[in-house]
Structure formats: structure tokens, C-alpha cells
Length: 253
Length: 253
DNA sequence: CAAGCGTTTCCGCTGGGCGGAAGCCGCGGT
DNA sequence: ACCGCGGCTTCCGCCCAGCGGAAACGCTTG
Image (cartoon, rainbow over all chains, first blue to last red; front, side, top):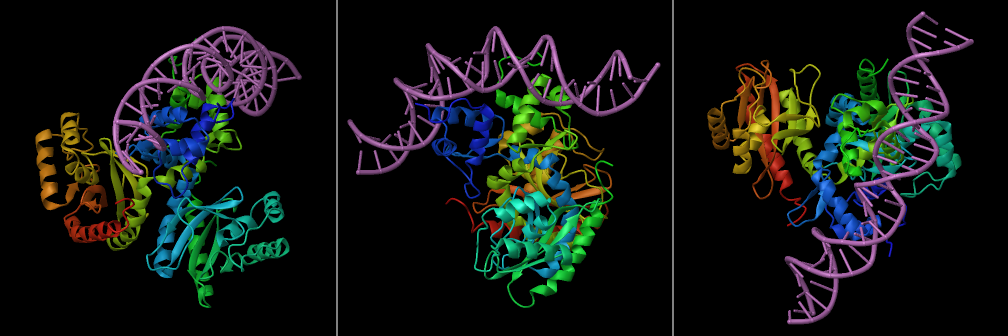
């Protein structure tokens, strides 16, 4: 019996093996991987074995499988995200020191924000996001900033699609969302109280490259109280710094 | 004619495609990839195309190829390096603020140190390392710390192998290296003036998990002058903090 | 000690993938 | 404008890498 649809490339199977690892699965058994990826165990076993030989996966002493550092190493190398991170990091540190709460850097990936860096303190407010974690664009302040400056096509697609509510405060009405985006473009900042968690407020500003195009969002997550707005100037200042730092070092003219 | 050895798995070809990207190659053409990976252009074209469809590679407007964020995302997720980084980051930030120079976190990968995090200031000393960059274990302070606590087998293998000199000060004599390692174990710190670059001094201390095993090295790179030793206490203090932060949150008992 | 589960190994059949060649596009030279 | 060149993609027929059923292995549990 065929466990998976026939007529499929090896590569897609490999991709599915990696996608079997959810954000919370640090280690998986071969059978578990096979089940999630929809592969025959024998196939999974063979592929996992080869991936281990290449260092893309590694095995625990108990034979369980986890993602190997080699994979991370290759991915980190030429990733465009890295140079952005490199430029933003010093300013993020300063911002983090001043604000004292979660400070994060996100880019738009599809209709979601992908967070590529996060600085946090143990005693800071709750934060659902994590590094290499995602959040729908319309619920996070970073997402709203990125969406506000995204191609109109993508904006419409998000406005049309279902808008999940994380809390009662999440904007789920297309009309209101449209207004919010316009306001973000006008004011240059997204200020969201309790969109993703009642207790937190997210504030995000755009980061622009040399051409003025918005390439990322810089944000902080602070306690949801009336003082939250106070952080906006610091955030804007940091954003200016990052954008300036990115301008000279453009890879290609 | 066969450009590559026949009888080879698709996977190894894919791996070679990714390895075609050196640390400095942000974007490559298909032909370039094919040449470096030893593949037929047609093969490279087909595989690249499929990898792009899966988001592991992405194409510039000019059809050149770079590594996709999806790859980084998957790699970051379950990587054991991430939880280490998460625990170390707050302390690294403090250390960085106090020392004011490059602060880095490295793990042992084979006979080399792989740097998984680095904080730096633009005005700091030269630093050859980079995030996701490697350095032979015997030339960097981090490497010496990690090597000093590595399995004897690995130590002997490094001591036996060729020991490249980066500067005249790099330790390349097996006997002296053996003594250095013993000293690192005794004093709990590796102090290296001008091993990798004449102008810089590296200082590294071990990070231990709950079982007391050395899992990483925390290091700073400062100007190579007589004040360098002054940083040691701050470094040791930070290391204690990180080790403590790692102990409670052990994934599996 | 058997039953159950997870994992690896074996092997014969087959379709995914290889690579030669042709075709397409954009560039620079005459 | 024409041609040649280099990079890239597409096509297609042959063939071996890889699939998956099955069996064997090893560990835990009742």
C-alpha cells in the first residue's frame, strides 16, 4: 500500500521531513516523522539516515532525531535576513536597554510576520512571539506596519481573507483594518493595545533601505497601560539609526 | 559526458547546491552553482527551480539565486543552539555593554568553533569571526576552552593534525598546545593575545549545562594591550549567570 | 515469554531524475 | 541590424536511484 501519493519528488519528501518539526518539537522519532510527513517508515528511515550523514539532521543518543546545526549554519550564511539583523542589532540593544521590554525585528513572509530577532528580559511582559516564529500580519503591530507598506495586491488579499481574532481587541473588520493601515502609513507607527494578548501592547515602526522601501519592522512589546505611548519616540529614533546604518552598505548598486 | 560522478543521491546534490554558497556569496547564478557543485546545468536548473518552489531558495528579480528565509526558519526552530542562545543573550548584552567590544558565543563543531551569536559595536577592534562563521579550535580562545573540555579522543586528533598559524603568536606546537589546554582547564579561562590577529586579544570561558558539562564558550575580543586581562572577572560572572539560567530549563530529565 | 512498537535492512520493480541537445533571451561587439 | 556568445530553461528517452512490502532486529511492557 502506498502511504503517500505516488509520483512525487525526493525533494518534496525531504521538505516534508523538515516540516514535520513544529516549533515545539525539539526531537522526533523516525516513525513520528514518517507519520507527519506522510511517508513510508522505510523511506523516512533511509532519508533521515542520509540527512544525518550530511549533518542536516542529528541523532540523540536514544536515536531520536533533531535538526542539525549544519542546516542552521548554511541557512544563516547567505540569508538576506542576516545583514538586516547585523545592521539592526546595535540599535535594538540600546532600545532594549532603554525600554526594558521585548524588542523585536520582523519581516513579511507571505501574509505573516516572521520574527528574525528578539531581545527580552525574563521579567518582561508576556510575549507570544519567538525567534523564527510567525504571527498573522493583521494581529501584530509589526505586521500592520509591514502590511501598510506592502504591495496593494497583498493588502487586498489579507483584507479579503479570514481575519482571526486573538483577543476581543484584534481588528477583524476589513473596513476598520483598512483605516488602521492608512493611519499607520500617515503616522509612521503602529500602536496596538491588546491585539494579541490583553496584557500587552505592541508598538512598531518601519525600517527602510537605501531606496526608502520598507524592508522590516522594529517593534517593542510593553505592558498594556496608558504609559505605553511614551516609547514611541525612542522607537522612531532607533528606526532612523538602523535605516541609516543600512544605507551605505548596499550589496548591489 | 558526465559532469559529476554517477550513482549519486539527489540529496547529496542538493547539499552541494547549498554548499556552493560560500560565506560571502549572497547570490549566485544557476551556471555558477552548477560549476561549484559539479552538476550538469540542466540538473542544477531543475533542482534550483524545485527548491525555489519550496521556499528554500529564492530568486532575485534578475533570476539570480539566494538562500531563502524558509530554510533559516526551519533550521532555527528546533536547533539546540537556539535555546542556548536564548539563555545566554541577556547576559551577553550586559557583558557587551560593560566591555564595549565583540562578545561572542561559540560551540564546538567537529574540530572547529562555530559562532552562533556575536554582539559588536562598529568602533570595536577587528574581528575575523562572524555569526555562523567558523574558526579552527586551536586558534581562537573559544576553541581552546571547548577543546580543553572535549573528549580526549578529539583533543588527540587535533593535537596530531596540522595546526595552522594565523599569526606568529598562534600556538602550533602540539606540546605547547597540550600545556595551554591544561592551563585552561586549571584556570577556567583561555586568554589569547594575538592568536588570530596581532591587534586583538581573545578571552573565553566555558558555559556549563545542568550536568556540569561544557556545552559552549562565551568570549570577548578586545584590543591586544596590557589591560586585556581586566575583562576576565566580568566574563566569569556572566558565564555563571548563563550556566545558572540554563540549569532549570533542561528539556529532558 | 509473547506481544507490541519502533527501527533498520533487504530486494525486485519502476518511475523520477539525468543529461545531451535544442531553443530562448539578453548582451556586446562589429 | 546582424551575429555570436553565455546563461538559462525545456524537452525527451534511457536507466539507475529510490520506493515500499516484508522480514528481521531490539527494546519495552504486560
